[in-house]
Length: 248
Image 1 (cartoon, rainbow, N blue to C red):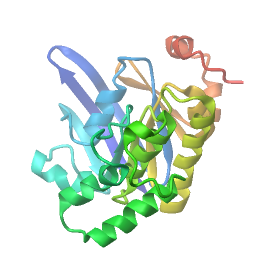
Image 2 (image 1 turned 60 degrees about the vertical axis):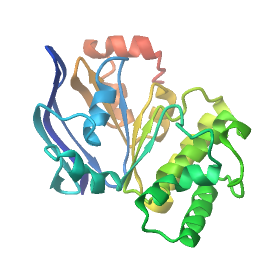
Image 3 (image 1 turned 180 degrees about the horizontal axis):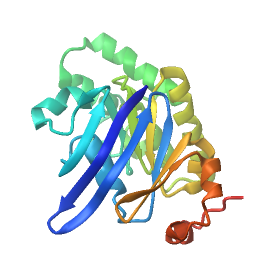
Image 4 (image 1 turned 180 degrees about the vertical axis):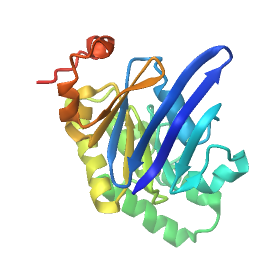
């Protein structure tokens, strides 16, 4: 069953067409990686999925319901079903790990503190960082900060998590650790994962499907294995050169 259904999406900024004729599905439980050169429209596409950018044409359905024409108030409930891991982690330096992870739960104001504490503890355990609630982001390594940010993204038990460059700036050991965590969260919690990344080795290793964006269009949609078969397509040349990805 499709969680997201995107049809004929078009986004225009001023006189520049950023996205055009974008159509694809994202099914429940999938790990889907959106990739492409810088400036190709990846970030704009992801922003349309969470209502930060409104498409000029086309439709987006989430969980079977149309969301492309929702006003800001209508997105409140939808966004509670979507977690977001930002590229820089975006943790609040002045808050403890506990308060960072609990922030959205406190803002919602419907959950008793005892239940919040249990959810924070469980989320930290899910990213293999138990018992660090009292620490501050400054006390953590870059890899640990990424994992705390991931714990914050899943504490609301979202149906889908969007990862913006989740392994950017990490050493190979932490890249592997974060990749394994994303797969573990999918397996344990049934979370659908949408990943935006320049790390093509990671993308090919963990993705069920790849969506390659170029010049505002979908140049490829399919499995990593299928991508190897079309790598000779001249439209993919600039992307392959810029990413330096090794297919074999």
